[in-house]
Length: 311
Image 1 (cartoon, rainbow, N blue to C red):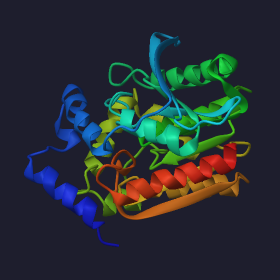
Image 2 (image 1 turned 60 degrees about the vertical axis):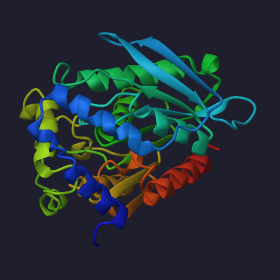
Image 3 (image 1 turned 180 degrees about the vertical axis):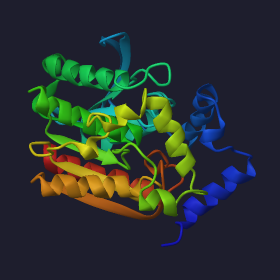
């Protein structure tokens, strides 16, 4: 499939502006550059309430932002714990504010967006430890947060999809929080950059194959970490007993095969899973509902599926 025309127009605009590939930047420069993604989310929607808090993490207090949907139902609400993307090194819950608002309103869930610590200053497993601790905190404080413990899921995109998948594995392995659902948008689920989609979409689609190598190698302490299933959820020996899933891939994305392969792994293990491929789309499009029609369609789909799964 050719590039979606709106994606093609954005890529041309970025090229014309002189935007550089992520792998040519320092982590500090990446953190500045990724702020531009905030503008692609469109005008922030109103929600019923937003609360900024710090919660205890294993090695530091973690900022979280709690979004309440504009039209939430009475009584305890379902919840989604959101782990943002950005290659484990960039982005934050502020960059994702417009998306988090949309997510709360489309799903009817209370969304808890987690600002985990970033690599390379904080390499694997610190970001995962932060996300798992935040998940435990949400469950431990569900009553105060107005949440139904039986209707809480996780959602993540890109590196955040990696963290969300790893959190579900760890929660199962440690008899931890009983997560009810997982949404993984173009997740990075296996250390490496040699899948067919990484080779086919190596250059020119915002995220590049060299970008994958750059981000992964900032996250891991050594290639040995890449063989840990909590770092590479695809290689876990057992995927049974995980929460039902919605997994999304973008066609023109080096990570396209990661999402498809993980969906196949879950299905083979008996986990109910829906896999959706968005044609002509590029990595990161979940945050781009201000410029892409397919991003709006994806948010609507996530809303329908989450409501069906969590009620």
